[in-house]
Length: 490
Length: 61
Image 1: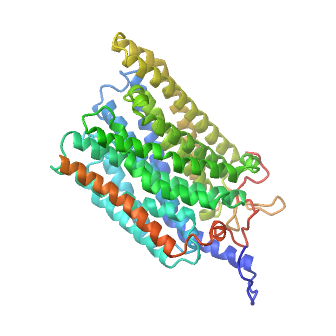
Image 2: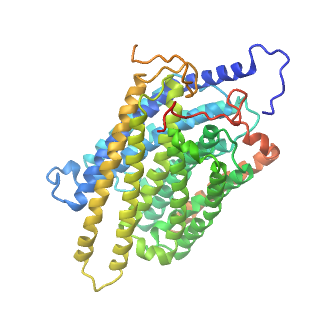
């Protein structure tokens, strides 16, 4: 809006802007499509493993005589496939595309970056198979054998180099709030990952201190890797989709810097009641409660940006997923801060309540935001429209409703379970029996979510084959009177 | 053991310090002087404020 008028109007500024954007999006095509396609593949693998693990919780005989799929292996394999396969790969794809858009620069390293996607895939594949074969490190969130660290490290180094290169030669005068979040993710994650590998796999870390390092890392993967990528996406796509700047840019910056300063202290709240110095845990609780500041700023800001524009939810696939995700970010963060209080935690700890909370974060917030991002980005990379609104509808409702059932069932069951476990008069087996119906509800929710993932994979497969209407420009807006080429001709 | 906790919190402190260093750098560079312009930097003449950029054509989805 504040652009200075050009003296030579050839080509027209709008046309120039459009061509620049097409070039930026094209430069991302190979890399980001590789990352996205791999992410969708891992989403399906992770869903299958999730269903196996979930069914075993109420039907222990299911696949019980094959050691590769015992609960102790299927569950961490599910986590690794989802975190390092689906979440991280969808996240890196979005992160690279966003940075190209934000810096108005082409994505560099057209050979190296797609190669990192291949290496990343091989690493995750090796990790998941190793876990299933019994070689898990048995340290939660970092079960993949440490020998893979160097490969992940190589990929992340390439991604950092690309980020710095784009930022240094940026065309945009301003550093948008999403860029701050993305820098947070890209610079903090490697530090976390390297220090966790050192702390967890060297003789220096033993016993209870290992747990402290473990949860400092695990919580920060969520808070300083997935959360910043998710919020960067929300801060870019809500304004972009509805065509309205963020309600308060001041608040958005306050939100980022308060997250940057508080989040990384929160991890030790996972160890309340554990054999660790009380001050260590109290620091974690203080950090968790301070998170109210960034969360409230983000929630207020997103809501006020959306006010008056909620009707777009009816028409925009991206917006629907993103707004669902943003709302769940608020919910999961409030819940998390409260859960870190000792009085709440003594009930919720070691129950299904925590599992519901974790999925509200990684699934209802991050995964839904990534779905929204892919719905926006993929058509612009592949010049094709999504081929079916009906399948998107199936995807949205199965995942949204599935997640709601998942969360409600396990939150309720977990809370009751926690209260019962605190009562020494109740036999343990009675508590287990009490949870069984709710574990079934989790499996039902998992089936729904998997149906959603299958429809998403079907949509994405057809996107790769460019089965949808051909998009001449980089936007999704096809006017009704415009001739539209349909079909999957090569 | 105490040394280990110190190392862990040292790292946590390092993360916080990196955030504060970035904040100081950004303030010095004047990143926060033109917030209105910054908030509009994701729009351009072809996708200006007011233009909806994602929806399914002619379909309530």
